[in-house]
Image (cartoon, rainbow, N blue to C red; front, side, top):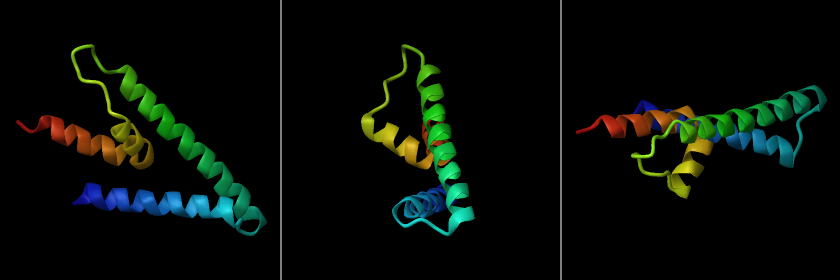
Amino acid sequence: MWINLGRLMMVLVWCFLILNVIQPFPRPLKYFFDVALIFMVLMHVLQLLLLKISLTKNEPKFTILFQIRMFLFGIFEMLAWQKKLRRP
């Protein structure tokens, strides 16, 4: 339940940051949210790359859908993935 709530919050943050690109906020906030969007994209790409690099050869490769979800939801998708791996 908490993971899904985190995913919902992440979608709202993405929408808010993309709204700033489509219709910019007043000047001081515009620059802050532009930097926040760039930082969020970089951190999610870095997280995805580090996860892909840490895979061993025995583990299955990530699907494109999983990679997109990992990029969009970040840590919340990683927590869901780890929870799914721990189940017997």
